[in-house]
Image (cartoon, rainbow, N blue to C red; front, side):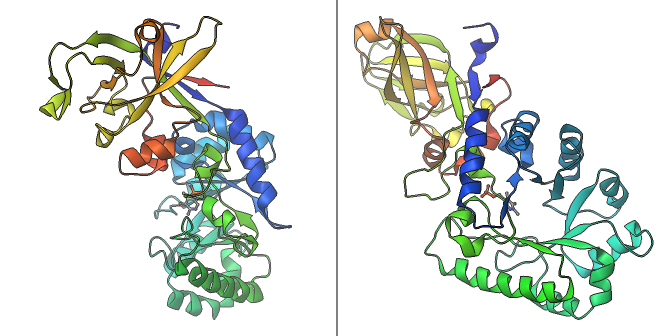
Length: 378
Ligand SMILES: *Cc1c(COP(=O)(O)O)cnc(C)c1O
């Protein structure tokens, strides 16, 4: 263990990200391109590493959330990528957006008008995209306003629209009727818009949306989570390769005498004779406190042949800011003597599972991963 790894080692497998991208792309219908969502620092994994890895396997359509993320990504990648800002644009940001050649996702006629006013050269605005709400009721133009917009072809032409976007609310539940409802609405809108502006492409599917089938793919898909190993079809075997591993050092290994309460709040008892491993990694490192007493880890044991074996052990007591505690009583004396570390995330203990233990989703686990670990890319 190097000095830096002393605070925990977070390994991010860029080859797995690239492979996940290629696997998703291979599922798309003919003629549909695969983009990549790299917002929030590529879901916490490091956009400066992840984006070039995706570029190298052919991705040219990138999606980020904010203007600052877009500016940073523009500097990071060659000129031939298209970068779209998913959370749109605040008034006053137009010039910065155009300078970095970023495409804002506009959500109202007023925003379109402003975009035209602020960015037009010789009667044509800089390229922009339109977000339509088809049932998610988050960002997006409502159906009524969209119908109105369709009757203003001069406005649409002047706006230089290149992409129509909508987002699925329930794509991870294939049977949910909302999926079909949103699909029908989006297909109609996309068709209608194309009669006015034939060059406009359509983008609908996130990771789970890709799994819903070819009708959902349209021109450009926008997967994020599945690239990073999150299961796009919960309840079924995960088709994606896991991307992150988290291995934390043991700060203290101790046997308790007597039945004792463990951690803040004395919420859980360790029976007399229990062996406890106190590890680096607490809620300030993204080990969510909500998984207190429910999380699991893998005790890594060095074998005489130089390999390592793993034994799954439970977390015990509350997660603290810098540490958490695992009950390693399942290990025998010999194994305990060869205990190397605890893995909180690996190929078996997935971000989806950790998310479930904390009552949340793998997305939140990834975007919470701490900055005190040594990060290694492979
Ligand atoms: C985050 C996001 C995505 C990516 O979704 P995943 O479920 O991570 O694949 C796609 N589109 C929009 C609008 C988003 O906000």
